[in-house]
Each structure stands twice: as structure tokens, then as C-alpha cells.
Image (cartoon, rainbow over all chains, first blue to last red; front, side, top):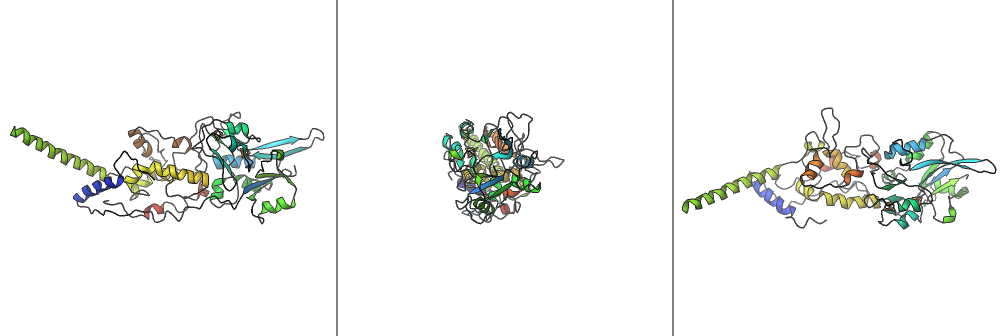
Amino acid sequence: MSNKSDQPSVERRQFIGGTLAAAGALTLAPGVILHAAGSADKTTSGASGEHRWGMLIDANKCADGCSACVDACNSEHGLTDLGRPETDAVWIRPVKLKDKQTGHVDRLVMMCQHCEHPPCVDVCPTNASFKRIDGVVLVDRHRCIGCRYCMMACPYKARSFVHEALSEQSVAAPRGKGCVEGCTLCVHRIDAGEMQTACQEACTREGHNAIVFGDMKDPDSEISRILKSHNSVQIRADLELNTGVRYLNL
Amino acid sequence: MRSSLISNRLLMILLAVLSFAAMQAFAESRYVTENSQAASMESCVAPTDLMRRNHMDFLQHGRDDTVRDGVRGLKYSLAECIDCHASRDAKGQAVSVTAEGEFCQACHGYVAVSPACFQCHRTTPDESGSGKSLGYRLDGHSRALDMQQPAGR
Ligand code: SF4
Ligand code: SF4
């Protein structure tokens, strides 16, 4: 941590302040080492490569007309509906697929697939798009210049650009005009040790149970067990991105 | 000649006394807004001088740890700055820290900087509860009280 070098050091200022204060009949205690006693114990160790967070969506269970997951995502991350669907941010959206031959309709929800080999990261000129060591693909808004290359590179149309100035954002998801954003897999919950995304929570609450979130590297997790015993698919598996979001009954 | 020497000396003494008073006032001033949590506390999470000078470096260092590596609950947190320094109006409503005369704006305005923090970060405490699971407010602000007092205060 460097002090601003063109200014006298804080220690010196403290000394002056302290000396003056001492003249005002207060005791000067030079060389007191300051430390916040409780600062270390709340600091978490951060993301770990021992996990890969992923999601499994059952197209059979995703109910027509339901928007519980979308609403939950919007409120969790403070995504406000400005009534402008062309430009409003969308992190998760329902999609209908119709087989023209048979007329069969599949419904599923689409969001950032948290690719192992994410094209958005490949193209980002500023390293703002990045993949965390635990597989979560994020935008670092401190670096994003809003060029939107990642939006063009993403095969899943998973990202949104924030077009308008915002205020009163959620403390869980700071976001603002001029940056690109997308599903974070509720990374603030993961970091707090809460093993449930907002969308999964809402889907389960509605009784649909179409979304399972979990650790794909843990063989005993629910998601791993289902992936092992059922035939799941990756959307656009031909791109070999090894997505973290998988689908059942598609 | 002699009289002008005396007046010079007097002037020097006067200056010394004045600057002494000014610096003492500076050394003892608190720079918090009324009706904020910070106003009721002994000091910030680090000595005031250190925070005043280096808070931007502390925050900038921590942001990469948090965003890119998922390290939470760091000692320096912008969300906590805002929770603690936002003042409350007569109705108990939180006032934005970037409103005229409020904690962040007053100083940033004085030194003529416009940091981009608040394009993305909210400027009032988040009372919707959506940040609950962030973990950083699990035990309130007791941490800030744990520290030793800065020298000479
Ligand atoms: S789905 Fe799109 S935004 Fe998400 S990691 Fe893959 S390429 Fe990037
Ligand atoms: S919009 Fe931002 S995140 Fe996307 S490619 Fe450009 S700089 Fe990277």
C-alpha cells in the first residue's frame, strides 16, 4: 500500500498533530501500532478451485407461464424494469423451443452458461470478463469499458448492457451505466456459503423444482448425482465450451 | 529600523499562534456528518488521518480481491463506508453520501475529484435486505470498535 508520494507522510502529520495535542495537555503515544483486532476473522478465503459451480435445468419441470425465477433474479440483483424491453437488463429469461415437425414445445430458462472456455473472456480487451477459479464467469465493472465485444461473442445472448444511469442498486450487485453484465450464479451467496441461487430458491418455492444448483466437482452433490444418472445436454455442445449450465429432458 | 524588527517579530509570533490554533483544530476535527452512525463512534476502521489520506487505495486494493477472487468481509469495504457515514434526515431516512454537504461529497467536492464509485455503488445503506447474505454485516459494526485509539486522540 503506497502513500501518495508527493505529500508528507501520515506518520509525520500524526506526529505534528500529536505534538500539538500534547501541548494541549493530551498524552502523545508515538509508535502505537494500530490494528483492527477483529479485521482478519471475518475475511473469507475466497473462491476455490476445488469447486465448479453449475446449474441443471429440467425442461420438463419448467412451467409454462411461470416467471418466479426471473422475478427473484430481478429483485435479488436490483434489476429494475424501466418498461423498455429493448434495453432493460435481462440476466435470466424463459425460452420456448418448438419442434416444427412434431409441434412439441419445450420451455426452459436461459442465462449465462458459465462456460469453461468462455468466448466472452477470449474477446474482452480489458480482462473485465473473467472466469473465477470456481468456474463462475463475471464482468469486473471496474475494468469494463462497455465495448460490448463479449455480447457479440456470447453464443447464448446471455449478457446485457446497462444503457441508463442507475441509483439505489442492490448492495449485492453494484452495477451501472456503460457496463455489460450477466448472471453471476449469485456469487455473493456462494461467497457467503449459501448454497442456493435466488432463481432456484424461487422455483423450489413455487413447487416446480426445475433448477438444481451445486458443485459439479463434488461427486456427492445433488447436481453431480443427477448428471451421472441422467442424460443431460449442453446447449450448443458442438462449440465445446463445456458449459456449467446443463439441461435435462431437452 | 528597530521598530520594524519588533513588528516583524510580533508578526511571526502572531502567525505561529494562529497556525498552532489552526493545526490543533485540524488535529482534533472529526469530519463526520451529524446523525450518522460514524458520528457516534470513536474512530473509523483505521486512524482518521490514514483513512483520510489512503481510503481510495485501501478500497481499490480490496475491490480486486473481492470481485475477482471472491474474498469477502475485508477490513475496508465501500458498502460499510456508506452504511456508517450516511446521515439520517428528520424522518430517519438515509441521506445519500453524495448529496450536497454529505460525507463523501463534501470532501470530494473540496478537493475537486469525481471518483466513479457511485456510478455503480449505491449511496445509501441497503435496507432491502438483499445484501444480507453478503456476510459483511453479520455482527454489525462491532469490529470498528475493537481497535486501539490513534495516537494523540
Ligand atoms: S454463456 Fe456467454 S457470457 Fe456466459 S460464459 Fe459463456 S460466452 Fe460468456
Ligand atoms: S463490454 Fe466490458 S466485459 Fe464486454 S468485452 Fe467489452 S470491456 Fe470486456
